[in-house]
Image 1 (cartoon, rainbow, N blue to C red):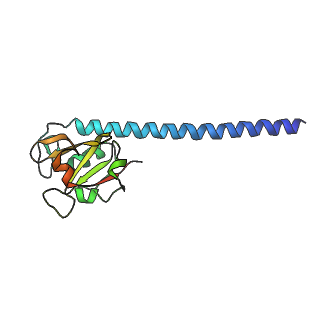
Image 2: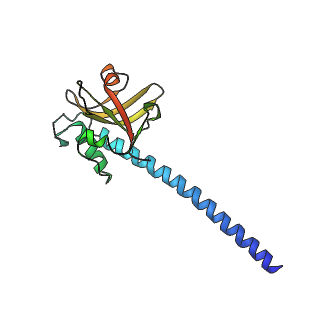
Image 3: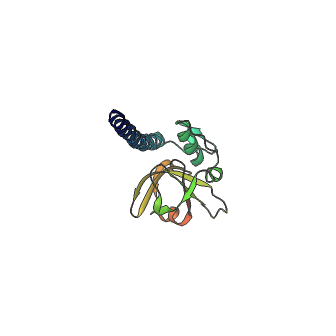
Length: 161
């Protein structure tokens, strides 16, 4: 009888610990990811108003991929420097599945390859907003509703799970 009772107690104890630890680690992982995404967006949007500078990766000026590169670098995440190389990282997903923290890529000015990137800051049912460095206005937030970006949209990549 004592052995059966001990066995039942041990079974309950190990089963409880296992399910609790999995739930906690999943919730912690989601929270950490949410914090990471928010940190990235905050870092990028802190640069709104900084001028465009070809090859730029500092507050004295950013190009689009330089903004994304330095933003992710601030969280010790290494990305390639060029937008067309950044487009090869992560998983390509549908625009409809886009989330905050994903990267959005474009082929602007009739380019045959990806030449522009932004970091998604907000997703609504019919619009995606992203922070990027534009050649004319520097670091700004734009929308996929704008004809220029609607017409040059190429893909969305999920870098963070």
